[in-house]
Image 1 (cartoon, rainbow, N blue to C red):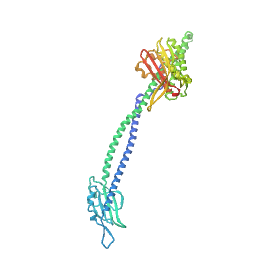
Image 2 (image 1 turned 60 degrees about the vertical axis):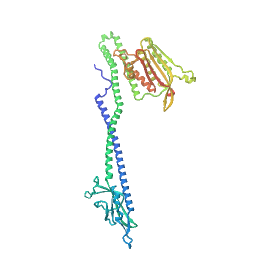
Image 3 (image 1 turned 180 degrees about the vertical axis):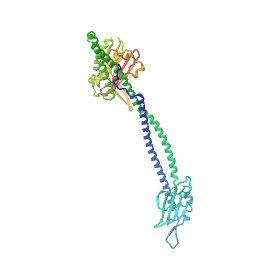
Image 4 (image 1 turned 30 degrees about the vertical axis):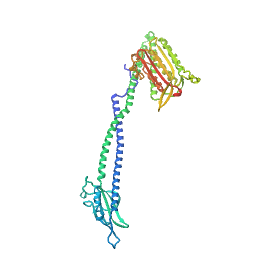
Length: 489
């Protein structure tokens, strides 16, 4: 009968791919939209600043021209018997027309009653007179419009009242075409639009690239989760199938009382197999839970001083039974401290590091049992412990720290070089020798699930250490674990 999967399979791959692509597009769109908004605000600020600067420059020019013209006015008495003064228009404005023509500036002189007396314009503007020193923008009707280059509809004007004492002599109005502002403003808008468009396009391209980079870890995590779920389902399916099959056989035997006596030994063997498979399931589930806690960073961080020499003596002693069965020489070698180290306390704690005793024992049990399992009969497995000093540079300064170096070396079948990068992946098995069929004998020393080295790496990383492997195919393999000592942890 079909065996149900205990772990829910991941969603359809096409749906997941569509979800990642949609998220990718949304990230790129948001990145582009936010950047485009910021660029738009920046371009608007630049435009308003440049435009206000142009207007201020024109107003300053108009006020300056008005001051120069006012100083050049020829003031004279109306007659010798009167105190009233007047402006000699012909003498005052004789040279001003040529002076302002090149700058597109027009002058108008009005009497004290507002009557136009003199102008550089071909036609009067018919704009009421009022004093304005800060500059104003006025509209010109088309039929009254002067023919300038860009046919402006607006003028910038400054009007000043000329007076002597309390007597008003007249009004001087200085005008400037507005195209001196609109023309560079239009060009600036065009430049900003092109620049902003190019920037948004480049930002969109970079946003798509960066959002893809941001999604890569998520996609890789999904792929690992998918693979992990599939592998876990496969690993759980086999023992469950065996348990179910043996239970069904046992129940079938119970239906025939006359056969119970004859099949009692077979019945007992089936129950023992169910017991072993149940233990195997328990080990596999515990391994999965351990790795899940490591992934969630929820593993215990309560480290205590661990004498590595005593711990390895216990582990080696536990593994001696398996070594004797296979006639493998299993040895432990402790590299004593150098003669320069004479402090009794330092010598006594030479092989001590901070860590979790149970996790470290599990780590080296996995490594040593793997070495024994893949070493042929009559081979050798050696465990070596030493404290080494490693140097590194930080900001140009040389720093040193001490580490415990534990090597587990065997004379086994070796590992191909191409398999070394994947050796610590979960459920990874090198060859058929690392797999097991449903009829394989289950032992308590190994799960055969491909999680041993993954658990070893997780324990080492939990202790802020490193694990490396060197191997020669058909000759030997060496697993080296580096753990910081207590003062460097």
